[in-house]
Image (cartoon, rainbow, N blue to C red; front, side):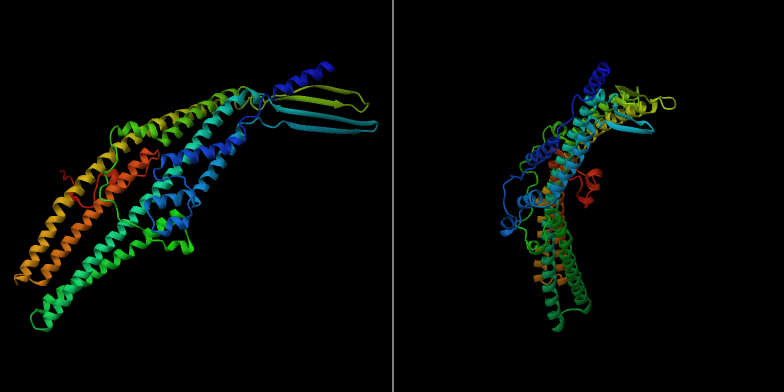
Amino acid sequence: MSRAAAVSVILVIALVPGCGLPTHAIADRQADAWREAQARVRGSDGIAVSVDDLLADGLSAHDAVQIALHHSRTVPAILAQLGVDAAAWVTASRLRNPSLHADALFFGDGTEVEVGMLAPLLDSLQQPLREAQAEQELLAAEATATRAIVAVAFATRRAFVDLLVAGQRARLADEGATAAAAAATFAQQLAAAGNAAPEMLAQVLAAHADAELRAAEAADAILPRREVLQRQLGLFGPRTAWQTQGELPADPMAGIDLDAIETRAVQRSLELRVANARLAAAHQASAWTDRATLLPGSEVGISAMRESDGEAALGPALRLELPLFDGGGAARTGAAAATGLAAARLWQLGIDVRSAARLLRDRLRGAANRLQFAREVAVPAAQRATTATLQRYNAMQVGAFDVIAARQRELATSDRELTTLAEAWQLRLQLEELLAGALPELSPSAATGATSHPSTAGVHR
């Protein structure tokens, strides 16, 4: 009996070689993801500054990113999700708990008791493979969280740009409404003096009404964009009364390096890191699936019995699952297919990252060229046209409506310049996000090359 006991003890010890990844790996992954995201996001300096201090002198793009990353609840939610994912994979890497079973039979002369403990036969052999798979899945989860934090920062920047553009567009519309109001007042004075035809007065008043409507629409467009940014910042109550500072910077190409853009995007891509880790995890999963299907559901352990007459016995126990109906072929094929799928996704993702880098670079250059044309040619031409029309009006060669129309064309050209500036900045932010490691969701205009103003497309200087 001592020999059987020794064999049983050896079997149990063999089943418990290790316990998998440590639980502190969860906190480590969360800290690593947060630190790396901060390093990748320009404008996140990690300095602990209160929200009220950041809002005191007007909200800047830098302040908005600081609040979104350090004070909103979005980042803690991302890190909490990483904790959930990491905990699942740490659990999966551990040995399965053994099962204990006991039977008791009551006889007239005593009780027969049988006790046994079983553990999966291949569990200890598979555990290193499962731990290796879990490590890769943890790397993928960490990179996914880092990517999500980077995306938060750039979503905040884009929302800030949208809000600045809406404010500048509203000011342009106000200028148009002010000019139309002055023209309407003057036309009414002329009409009262009998020096303006009724149809001319009607046209001027209609133009004034249209300009006022456009100004109201532009003002209303600020609110939804403000609330988009408000949600990114996670602010509510009295803290929602902030105001932005400054305007959209005039040069969207300042300080950006467009050399070797594909290589840099691939090297920095968090999506590719995730895909690489999941491919490695799929390889590990396929390897332990091959082992698991050799002796599926098999368990080994200790069995002890005490008979009713008091005699006791101790020995090894073995339970085997007979693979009569399922030999594991489908599981092995599925694991191999999952590995192939992960490899194909990694390859295609590399294509997508390179394509996005080229597309955003070229679209940014195109938008910058159109912006230069608008500033150097289109807007000055519209301004000269307005000046010339006003001179002719002073010489009583044209009517007030012609002056209003010229001014409206000038403002429309300025609005197109602003639209192009906004487009260029959004493209730049998408490119910066790509170089920070997160593949942005390309807008339809960026994906197809379409523009809001086809008449200026293809203009290069």
